[in-house]
Image (cartoon, rainbow, N blue to C red):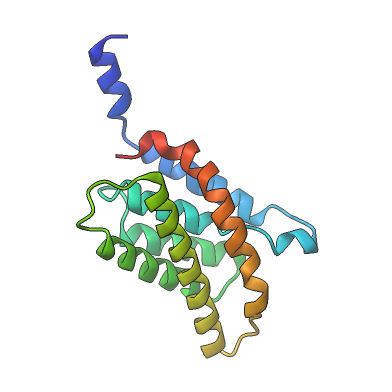
Length: 163
C-alpha cells in the first residue's frame, strides 16, 4: 500500500461517520424492547456524543451536544431541552477538564465516559425532580451499568475516526 493511499485513508473527514453513528444511536433508542429489558437500555446517544466530543474536538463540541440533545428530546418525547441541557453541561465540563490532556488512552476515555454518564443521569434526576416529574433514581443504575459495559464496543467500532 502506497504512502499516499495510506495518508488518504487516515485523513478522512468523520462527517459521514458522525451522522451515521447518530442515526444508529437513534434507532437503538427507539427500538422496542420488553418492559424488563428496556430498563437496561444504554444511553446510546450520550455515548456517541461524548465519543465525538472527546475524540473529534474540532468537529464536535458543545453545539453538537446541544443539537443532538434537542434531537433526542424530540425523538423520545422528553420535555424540550432536558437532554440538551444535560448533554451541554456534561460535554462542556468534559472538554474543560481534558483540554490540557494531549494523550487519552482507551482506559482514560472509558473512565471519562463512565463519569459523564453518571453526571448525565444525576442531572436528569435533578432536572426532573425540579420540574415535578416522576423519576425513580433507584431504577437508573441499570442504564449506567449497561452504558459502561457497551462503550468499549462503540469505541472499537468508531476508533478509526479518532484523531
